[in-house]
Amino acid sequence: MRATRAGLWALESWAVKSAGRPLSSLPIESRARVVEEWADSPWRWERWALRGTLSLLKSAHFDDPGM
Image 1 (tube, rainbow, N blue to C red):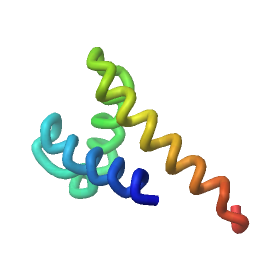
Image 2 (cartoon, helix red, strand yellow; image 1 turned 60 degrees about the horizontal axis):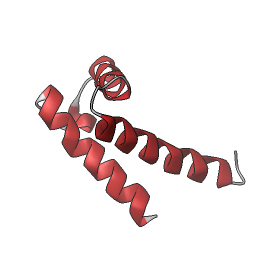
Image 3 (cartoon, rainbow, N blue to C red; image 1 turned 90 degrees about the vertical axis):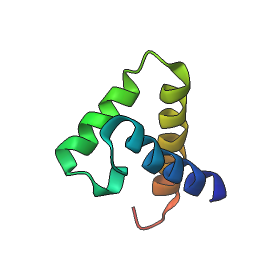
Image 4 (cartoon, one colour; image 1 turned 180 degrees about the vertical axis):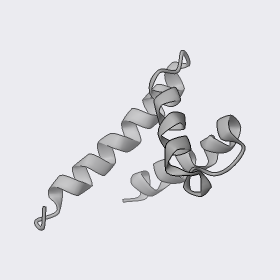
């Protein structure tokens, strides 16, 4: 849980670098654009951070018995 939370905060803060505002304060279209930029980034650390956080979120989602 701590790793997921840390990853989410990292992504939230990372958006300030590319969009000038935290990820949660951006309109949905801008959020999608920022995440797509990270996924296609030439900087592997940015792609890895996104993939790692998304993997943790997917795991938590599918571990939920209500899903």
